[in-house]
Length: 412
Image 1 (cartoon, rainbow, N blue to C red):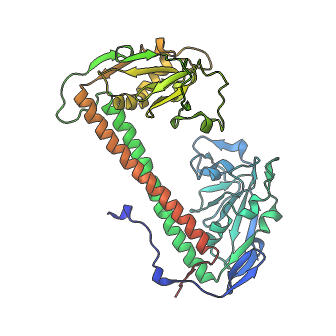
Image 2 (cartoon, rainbow, N blue to C red):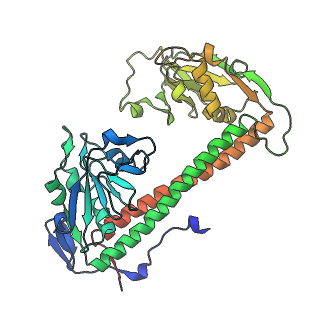
Image 3 (cartoon, helix red, strand yellow):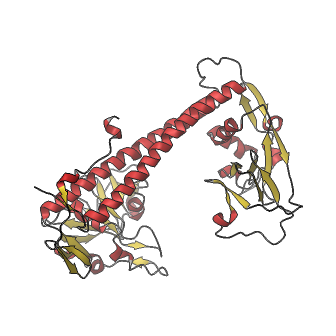
């Protein structure tokens, strides 16, 4: 295992659970901890409007609610910094729609002279009494703030509401140690996320090259055959005339076939299911009005029924199902689906048009080899996604223990 794969650890020999606790208005805490209000340990300022000075590639990043809620993935830039943020500042979203996921979401500023604070976002500058990283972990989506969201109207936190948030306050050395431990997990999570992004880019490029013949695997030199979907698939429509006892499925663009009751929270089919279609294992179906956004899937259960609106087909022995599934995902195929589709705002691609799509096919042996390479690449990605979930779960558990004093750290 290399350094980038190493998991952060806590030396449990340096942790201890104390018996001395006391009851407070917000729960039981260690006897040497306090409960403070946020206003006791910080200065607060509101952001300013920057909408009129947005630039395509400005010098400063605008910290608005979208930037904070997407963890910096979506951002705007400006050239004039009207409300500068400093390193170790904490930006907090103060306005959001009912039941929104952005309200009280926080961003910890990691650099000077890079960020400017937008309106409807507040800045919390922690004073020397506290560790700003420790306070950030407590404030981010704090339950105290979430109670202001009534689920009906837009939530707008006032300055006094932000500053009245109760803070669990251990001795400063313990704050430093807790922040250090949680930051170690954050670093590991960030590295894992970066690896996942890199692997997604790699896998996308690998698929595009291998499935179009631009890159050949060692030992395969035979020329590929250009053909059409019509010559490698068969369209069918098996109506549910006998009213078989089977689950109703829907086709989604993200999860393939799913139970209709899961997709819509209930089964939306009427009492008469005779017009529905029967789908069996190793067959395909797609939504002709949404295939351009990926609503096409391969059925792996034994049998089911689907809406009559779906187009069904199966492949023949000229192509492996696994190869065809991967081919459907590449950008060239998506482009051709858009090109062959008909309609205005919504593109429709019925089988008579779908069957005209061209596809280049290698031998079955080379198809199988390509599938194996892509499967290995996808499995590596899944392993890192599983690792990320584990790290995030570990961090959540640590926060619940460390930020409440249920587990104490030895700061000696």
